[in-house]
Amino acid sequence: MPADAALPSDAAPPADAAPPADAALRVALVSPYDLSRPGGVQGQVQGLAGALLRLGHAALVIAPDDRRPGWSASGGVDRYAAGRAVALPANGSVAPVSLSPAASVRAVNAARAWGADVVHLHEPLAPVLGYGFLATRRWPLVATFHRAGGGSALAKAAPAGRWATRHLSERCAVSEVARQTAQALCGGRYEVLFNGVDLDRFRGGRAAAPGGVPAVLFIGRHEPRKGLGTLLEAFTGVDPPAELWIGGSGPETGRLQAAFPASERVRWLGRLTDGEVTERLRGATVLCAPSLSGESFGVVLLEGMAAGCAVVASDIPGYRDAGGGHAILVPPGDAAALGTALQRAVRAEPDAEARAAALAHAQGWSLDRLAERYVSAYRRAAAAGGTIARR
Image 1 (cartoon, rainbow, N blue to C red):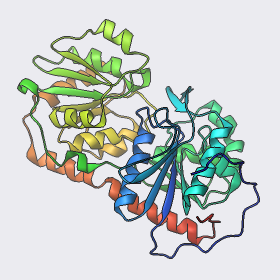
Image 2 (image 1 turned 60 degrees about the vertical axis):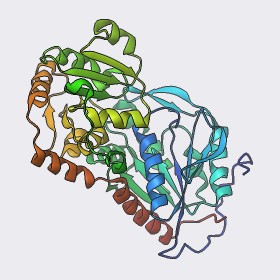
Image 3 (image 1 turned 90 degrees about the vertical axis):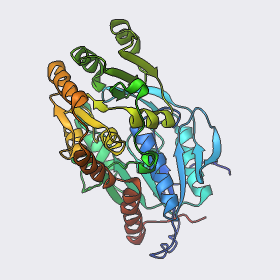
C-alpha cells in the first residue's frame, strides 16, 4: 500500500456519510512511541487494537518501529511502521519517538490508503507522528492523553497545545490526574476512561514459584522515577528466604547491579517478553510498583491482581486510582515503609477472599470493556460531522 505521497492539503475533502450506527468501523490507532520498545502506551495501543478486532471492527496500528519497516500484520491487526525512532528525554523517562516530518506524512497516507473511518491518536502532542492528522483534519479524531504531571515547560506550551488540538472530535484521559494535565495544557472537556488489562493472559491461574520460595517481582524501566533503587534498599530488610525478581533494563541498570549484585536473593532477569512477564506474574507472591512520580495510571497493579499477586505500591495518584483499595500503598521513596509492607505481604497467609475481591476489581478494567467505551466515542465523533476519508 502506498504511503509516501505528499501530505494532503489542509482543505478538507467533501464529507462522506458517517458509517451507520451499528456498522463495523475501521479504526487507525496512532502511537507516537516505538512498538519495538516496551512501554505503557505501546501496550495499550496494541491491546486495544486486539480488543476492537474481537468486537468485530478492523484495526490498524501506526507507529515508529525499528523492527518492521512498512506494512505488516499480527493476529489480524494491520500495522504500519512509519519510521525509526530516537530517544527523547520526557517526564523523567526516555520516549522513543520519531522526529521526522516525513514519518508524519507517511502515517497520514497509510491511514488514507487503508481506508480508516476514524483515527485514534494516543498522546497527540508527542512528536511527531500525530501532527499530520491534527493538521489535515481528514478524519474524526479521537485523542487519548496519558501523561501525568505538568511543569514549567508544559505551562509555556499551553497556547500551542490549545491551537493544535482545537479540531479534536473526542478527548479522553486515562485517569483523573491525566485529565488535569491535559486540561491545563489544551483546555477542553475530557472523558476519563482507564488503561485496560488483558485478562486472557492470566486464565491459566497461579503458577508455583521456583523452589516454593516467595518472590517479589518488579517490572519496569530502570530509571530514577520508577523507584527501583528504593525497592532494592527496602528488600534488604525482608527476611530470607524471599527472593526479588527484577525485570527490565535501563540507564540505571549498571549502577544498581554494582550496588546490589545478583545472588540467591536478588535475581536480575533483564528484558522479558510478554509471555515471560505473564509467567513471572503468575509465579510471584508480591508485585511491587515503587515509582516515585509521573505515573498516570497503574495498569501493572491491575495485572498483578489479575495474576493473583499481592500488590505493594507507592501512594501516588495514578496508583491510588488503579489500586481501588486492594493494594498496600506506602509513601514514595520511603525504603523503610516499603520494606515493612513487603515483609508483611510476603509472610501473610493466602487470603482467598481478598484475592477474589482484587481479581473482581481488575476484571472491571478489562481491555474488552475499554474497547466498548472507545467504540462509543468513535461513533460520537463520526456522528458529530467529522470528515471521513473513506477507502
